[in-house]
Image (cartoon, rainbow, N blue to C red; front, side):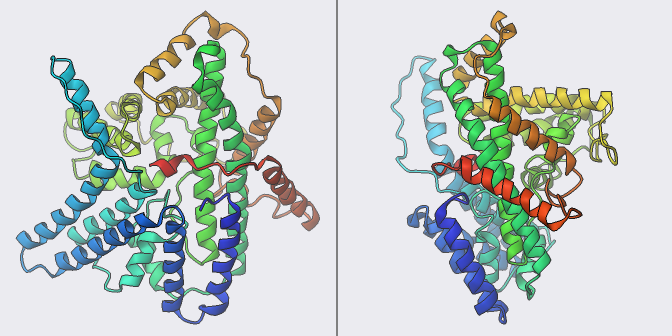
Length: 478
């Protein structure tokens, strides 16, 4: 069930009405409704994988209690590693087994040996990387003594499977979401309106920006030999806006939907394309995943402490793992490696914490230096996205090869003027609202009511005008 589908447009109001008009006087009933709704939402993709989600939930719920009640450290470690092994094992089987099998066969073929690897004929369970990381963070936090295990299975199951975040995040923490699930929630009109406003902006990002950019990005990436270097650059830029509009649009819809039910999810994007360096970009892009790797991998490895070699090693590890998390393809590993190389100078020279505030804080326009830094950072990011979008490493290098040719200095053969205008409008609104949680959080709040509603209706009209067939979100494949 896609957020941008008719089915979801029917599903959400029904759950909302039942939640506030039928179960609002009883917290347990509210949570049961959320759990049943979440399982129905997930089963609408493929009901068979619902059992995998339930098993994963039961596993971490049980091992969390077992760790807490363990009489000695040996037993505590046993339950901890049992949970980790099974969780990672499921990811390995469904997401990475075929990659490793095929890669091994290709590797030994170079030394004259031949193998016909046995591969699995299964589809990847939607959202498995996200809900597995929910459970892993919960198990890690109990093992480290940061939290106590949740004894109420319904509450814990809602934490893992809450439908707005289930299939593409944000990756929540038990310390943030569980207390909200256990606390009685009352309807807040202002919060609900704010949630609807964020949903509206998320749909605009997805339908008007991402899906329209996808048309041209797919056309250029799927047939790169037909296009000049300048057009390929444009294709990479279109993909950069596609993936940003697609993923941050999903996150906006998720956060806005959760707010309708009185729940605040972790922020996942903070205007990353206005970043002045790569370190800042990674503090603003997919924040919940970046912070997850920081807290559960980078810091346990030693973080930025120790000698320069350890800092370099730890940085490469988290970026390579982050790339691999996105998918079983060498392109994602190359994308992670490239970003690690990008960020390395700031790690070595200790400048990775230089840009902590929003660019042009309190000002209308950036300085020349800030503008140059943003353009450079965006250019590096766009180049890295080529590997992310390419079907394989050969495709990526073939695509890049013609960019660095004389045809780079020719006029692009693809020039969708209407899309260019929408991108300019989109980035202007994002810039204007960059100090808020999302771009239109305060858009028109001080305007006359009529003008404000005309603006919202114009956004809604654009969504309906460009809406066509339901386009799946990019991050559903991860």
